[in-house]
Amino acid sequence: ATHPNTPQRIDLAQRHARQFGAPGVGTRDRDPFLAGIDGLLYGDTPEEGYVRGETFLHPGLGVSFSVPGGFIIDNSAAAVTATGPGDIAIRFDGVSIDKSRPLTDYIRSGWVAGLDESSVRQETINGNEAATAHASAEGWQFDIAVIRAGGQVNRLLTAAPSASTSLDAVARSVSGSFRILSAAEKAALKPLHIRVVTVQPGQTMGSLAAQMVGVDRKLDLFRVLNAMSPGAAVSAGDKVKIITDR
Image 1: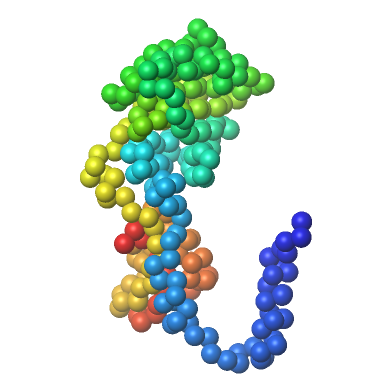
Image 2: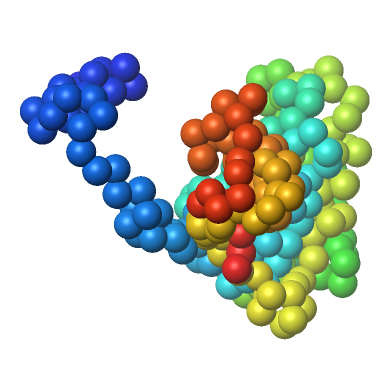
């Protein structure tokens, strides 16, 4: 790869900086820098949907589902995936098919490798038309749930090693959590932003980190955002960065 690694980038930046002066010379201009990033978008856009802890919510499609504790959700433009204990993985995406086409027929249409034809079932999940099935291939077992909602067919695929006994419980938990968002819920969903706040008397790193929303490991992230070591502290009047939906 031609892209420099992190130590190389640091060294390159330092050598460029030395052309303007020795270390400690010059103005840091921290306040203009912070003003420039205040309000910067952090994380997902409304078009991609939002991850909030163990729940994925998409205001455009108007749908939501949750994963069990211990799973980590990764949101991308192509699909939403989650990985968890026991090498179990979940994938969510959507497709457009004819509204009159039965979902059981869609599952049998050839896109599921190793499909167990006898497992295909017509279902209703939280009031939505759905179909489920099982499949297996090359040391893996799969649960497939397709749900018609939000103007498309939503696909939830859960994969686990063949020896796993947790597939059904995880898959039922995920598909059972799938639901349509209300108008109020969709309106309340906001993207996350970086906000610069001034530390008030009595506030600590812990209390400031607790103000952040939509992120995990808040204290660790607060330290990273503000380049603070575990033993560092904040003082009244300091300006720090937090993540919020305000």
